[in-house]
Length: 118
Image 1 (cartoon, rainbow, N blue to C red):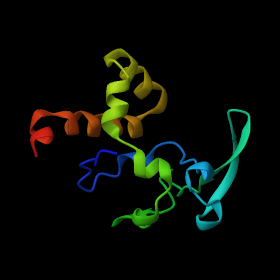
Image 2: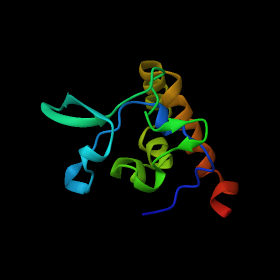
Image 3: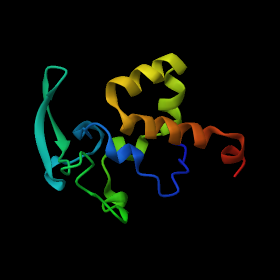
Image 4: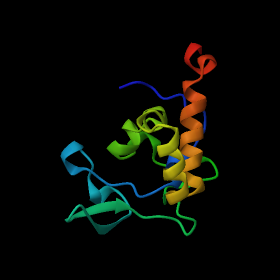
């Protein structure tokens, strides 16, 4: 797994829901969760703050960083940015709003030559 140069960025903590994956070692009993249906199956997701951000995110960043769920540990905004072409990114932003724009922007910045060299 490649280390993502987040440098305090928390854009990914503010978008969507964070699904727990017991098959990857996530123990739902270790987190504040709720159940929802995803792809026809019942799954546990982390609870959200009123603003939609992860329940474990505060002004100092992720409060469970060392014990974060597998999806958090493996997420790389650069992969998400690369997955979509420009028109697809625009469509995603139109559908999902500012939070996904922030993730795309973070991915773009972290893919820049200066970020890659450091």
